[in-house]
Length: 208
Image (tube, rainbow, N blue to C red; front, side):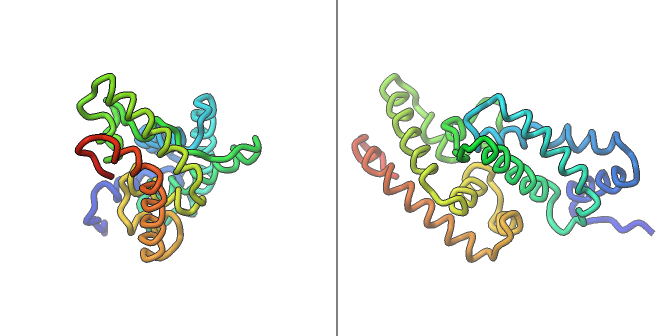
């Protein structure tokens, strides 16, 4: 008897995983197609070197494929895949003796991206030469503030503000209680706010 899941999208991912584990390579190709761009955007927010993005994304999907039999559907497939992508990116950067950073593009959004941060929308609205220059300056300060955050705070605020995950999803991705997630995001926002507020207060009618 087939059990119908209340969440079709999650059931679809789980079904593709089950087909892949059973030997259906096409099923995994469908998962890659579904999440490749999203994973590449995520990795692109962690590294400055755009040439590394596709390599890290490819390695992510290879690692995910090898560990696919461990996926039980307790969390969303993307949450599980995200953790592998983050760990793969960190390992690649450590191997190159570099530190993970949030790229400036993470706060600007793009026409084909349906998951942009609220901050990105604020910085790119009502563009004029003056506002564009101010936005670039603010983005640089935000980027520097993000770089200065401890890894756990940076990861939590990135998942919330850029990836748009819920607190429950972030807790699952980071392997910690929801209360810890809320605390990390609050502390991250406060740290970024302290750096950005002076710039915004110099702009008429704008506040952080």
